[in-house]
Amino acid sequence: MKIGFIGLGIMGLPMAKNLVGAGHDLVVLDRSPQREQELLDLGATRAASAAEVAAQVELVLTMVPDSPQVREVALGEGGIIEGARPGLLYADMSSIAPATSREVEAALAAQGVSMLDAPVSGGEPKAIDGTLSFMVGGDAETFAVVEPVLAAMGSSVVLVGPIGAGNITKLANQVVVALNIAAVSEALVLAQKAGVDPEAVYRAIRGGLAGSTVMDAKAPMMLQRRFDPGFRINLHIKDLRNALATSHDAQVPLPLTAAVFEMMMNLQVQGVEAEDHSALVKFYEALAGVEVRAGGTPEQDES
View (cartoon, rainbow, N blue to C red):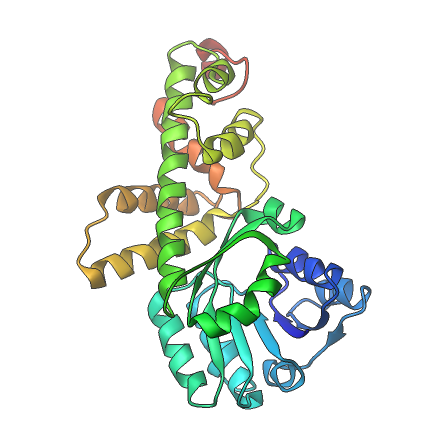
């Protein structure tokens, strides 16, 4: 299939490479010529605008930071809508506000374009190895056509409801992930300050009810003081902001989500917003006056 791919960031670049590896013909667009070149070297071609991408392909995929960027790429000057034609398919893989997905879908539907919202979970490692989880909103007919393309980038592709449902599901996912990271942070800081090796605590509890995919992904990063971003704090702030806005519209209180949102905002003020969201442990470390690390002791940390 000839596919347009717009947005070659931390996630988008490896996802696009997996599509090329699966035999698809790509037309790419990104603000970074260097990232575009990586795809050109693999046989992709480049377009000058989103409209130009849309005019050349059967399916457009976008992977951009947030709602304003999706709105701009889809409906703005030089956007997808200007290159649209009846029968064009569009799947937005960004994590955005569900209301924006519905707004964009309605505008494009008037031009004969069928849209899915298909946000992903898994971070950079799973984007690289092609095992992302896709949560998809839209009609079943469009999903049936696009599903094999998404499956080239992920190990799980699930249609969860009509347009917007994908992003509601992603917001639920991000709530669970954020609260898990906060709980792991609290537990490891408690262990460190109370004089027990936090790595030993992690090994002891990971096989029980407390164990989780989040714990196995993030606890080692905390223990190794390795906060290079698989998923940045500022992106999780964006997702939790969208979750809270959506919850307010639906009249659903999210008190724990609100608390973790403020913790991450504190880290943004501290200037670590570009670090991995596992750096949430630094919020708790500052409160307790210790630093979590494998084999460390409270006395060492306070010296």
